Length: 502
Image (cartoon, rainbow, N blue to C red; front, side, top):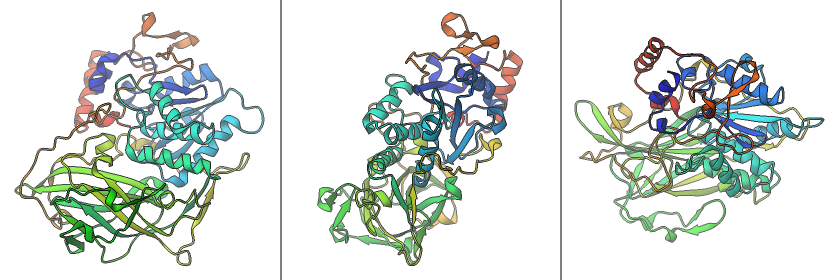
């Protein structure tokens, strides 16, 4: 019955065999797993916390510890994992605030390679589905602490975590950009400088009607994404000729590229220039785009959703300049390279061709920069405050295509006169599903495609020897209980697929 419930919830993953626990050994000492849960109905289709702990105790004794990255909450109290857990949370489908990276890497390094006899230890990383956020950190560790190349680290995580033909383990463009940042950081003394940043202008080529452009950034230790500014119509300057834009050179963080290298196919070229300074508290910047079309009776139709994260320390070549990045710059990106809805490739109809963000660091005499280095071995490594574990199923962003009520903010944005199809093209190797766990697989430490389920008394059992491939550790689920659980999930808003995303 539990297996049937998992099929109901998993949807497109129902045709794929499941092991006793949804986890994989990325390497001998790094385990990636989906977020366990201690409460129903979630534990009926996820790793039950007690079953995961039992497995880790059986395989690794006291030599395991958890690193979790869920700003929406873990889904279990720390006491259920003996308090052997480190918290570095940030929101689903996004890259981490880069200021967290040095402490995450150092804390994992100290557990696995610290002073004294620490042989045989393992790190267990998890987010929601054990894919995007977990993969970002697992790959970052392999690159910065074990000397792997970016390509090798990404290939290893994909090979161990994903079924063949279901795309990459880490697929969100901004998370991949962060992994490339980690590579550059690790090659240049592991030095990072946090600065406040002012957004001067946003240039858009090929801008369609009805597009809302917002500037976002992290607050509350990275747990919350705050909208700092939404450009209004009075802040929008139309340019008949895109070549009039005063942007002589575009930088991608590693080399300078003339603007002529990008040929705009524009419907209009626009400069968004704020009437008041937009100051973000850190070097992590997000540009969020949403296109709305006028519907009727107070409704609008959202036909495009996309965003992109970048970090001005790296775009300003900070690592290559010995920790002294440029004080200003321009970040450019094309529509097709931006992040889609909830980690998927889906963005809806094209809202623009490309954008360029003109930024400037706040002068040091107004706000001194903060120099962040990786803590040395044996030093105390700071940990972040955990999110409320009880809110695990209520967090996350719900932005999507479709009908929305009209708001005063959306009324400030010019709208197109017609509603177009929201269909989008999915590239080969990418999944159209927004389910962060879509296509994942289990992997044992020796590379086997199956992690056996631990029964009481220390014996193991899996689908191959007659065991059920469904949920473990939770006992049998009767038909009546199954129906009640399904009904409860439907009553929670019908967002079945939301429960299984990264």
